[in-house]
Image (cartoon, rainbow, N blue to C red; front, side, top):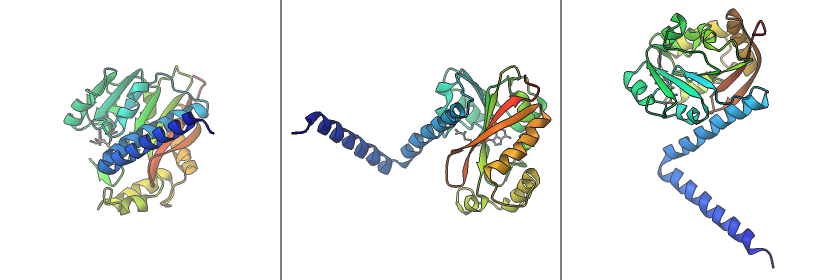
Length: 246
Ligand SMILES: C[S@@+](CC[C@H](N)C(=O)[O-])C[C@H]1O[C@@H](n2cnc3c(N)ncnc32)[C@H](O)[C@@H]1O
C-alpha cells in the first residue's frame, strides 16, 4: 500500500488549485493581481540571471498611477520607491501604498528633462507609460529620452531600466482598451525613435535604439532581456553600466 501522506498532499493541493481557479472565475481582477506579482518576480529573476541582481534597490516609477495595477508588486523589494503621476489623485493614493513610498505629483517627462529637485538617484527606473496613441502630446516614453538616464546613480556599478516595450502595435490597437485615433501619429513617432518604419520591433532592435540614447548620457547598455507581460507588450530590461567605468 502506498503512503497516505502523498494522497493527502495531492488532494489538499487539488482543493487549493480549484479554490484559486474558482476565485479567478468569480472575480477576474484577482487573476491580474496574481499575474502581476509573477511578472515582477520575472523582472527581478531576469536581472539576477543576467548578472545584475537588484537587492533593496532605489526605484523611480515616473508613470505610477496609483500603483494599484503594477507598481505595488515591487515596493516590498525596494529600499525606497518614488512614484510619480500627472494625476493628483493617483499620486495621492500612490503615497499610501507603503511606508517606503514617496509620491510625487507632476508631469514626469518635464521632471526628468528639467531635473526636478524632488527626484533622487536610482538603481532601477520603471517606465510603465501609457501604451496607445498620444497622451498630453507625449508618445510612449520617447519624450523621457535620453533624460531618464541622468537619474541613475553613477557611483553604482550598474543600473536597470525597465520599460514598456510594444512588440506588436497592430495587435495592441486591435484591443478595444488601446484602440486610438492617434495610432498613425504614434506609429510615425515610433518610426522616428526606432529608426525604422517596421511596426514590429524586435527586442534587439529596441535595445539598440535605447543604447543610442543611453550613450548620450554616459551609460552603456551591456545587455537586455524581455520580461513577459501580455500578448503585445512586455518589459524590456536594459542592463546599464557607466560608460567610463563609473
Ligand atoms: C499605464 S498607467 C500606470 C499604471 C501604474 N503603474 C499602476 O501600477 O497602476 C500610466 C500612468 O501614467 C500617467 N501619466 C501619463 N502621462 C504622464 C506624465 N507626463 N507624467 C506623469 N504621469 C503621467 C497616467 O496618469 C497613468 O496613471
